[in-house]
Length: 299
Image (cartoon, rainbow, N blue to C red; front, side, top):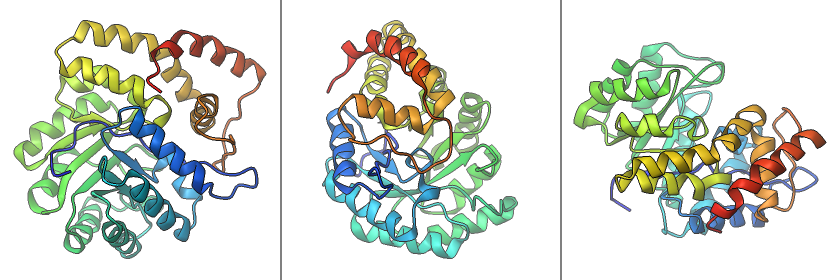
């Protein structure tokens, strides 16, 4: 668990019941699915987990369940983005107390502090914790984009800031810039954006990627091929699953849950997050996409 984080660290999707309550047995099934699919770590509750729709108590319970179900098999990075440093510190300390391997946080996602405000936010987290911090650099309007220089400064000056998740645009280039700026002070920069730029990110030195969890096995297989030096095979595998990634970018959480439902991981497709719902034509297109990649599933 002390080894540097590397590989596919999926964002664990939050299942709900038909009445929109947190489905605790379903969440445990999602954790088991991710681990069986080859995840190198687990992350959440983050954007793909619908974190903004969860109550404070639900976020704490979510972290407890995921850490408990993972049971040390892989590191769990608890996402603790809050509107101010005080509740972020409290939630992060709770995550640390129940066994999370680290925390990930965006700057306050409503108030969007300036560069010095972002620095102070992560300094408060660093001062309060004994586990690694991953800074999530995410695009607006939810995120507060930060420069490579600011990210590097935090890695140099704040003892617990060890990792970056880079999701500003263009993210592969930003990954390269942050790695160059931070040097040995950063243990790893991860990509996101559904793994859409995984090949480019890897070439530029990314340590891994944090997509939603419905394609954990498919993307980990691509990563393993890259690590083995088989770029041509990795590209062929990636191109085969790219239609699903593209479709995911259209429909977000509704698509994540549709695929997990079809894979028998969750029992209900309910989403709290407002957004696009799949219609019959969407599902027909998804049928065609999945028919080509289902033979690639590990579980």
